Image (cartoon, rainbow, N blue to C red; front, side):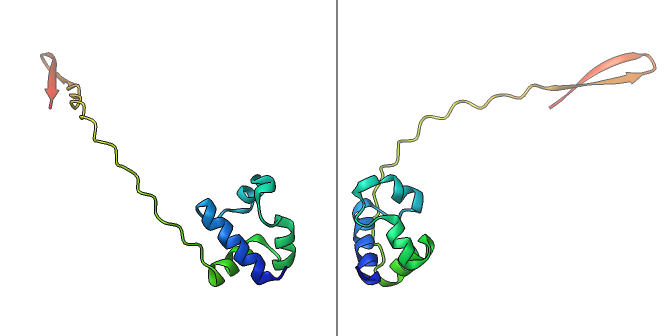
Length: 100
């Protein structure tokens, strides 16, 4: 199998699966993959180089998935902050002053 055939096969597989996978994801697919990862890496040198060549020769085109936005939940009433009390000492005794 030539490098070009490997890259084309991977591109078609990634398109079918919904996007480009990293090496861990690709390995986790088990026997469902069209080419074993070690064969591809042996031919190209590294997984990143495989992905780079694939994106240049046969880019993976995945249709964007439309996700419905959930309806906005009613917002809760804002919490009222507690008033801060400051003690001010004067000559004739302590006074409590509340700040807003």
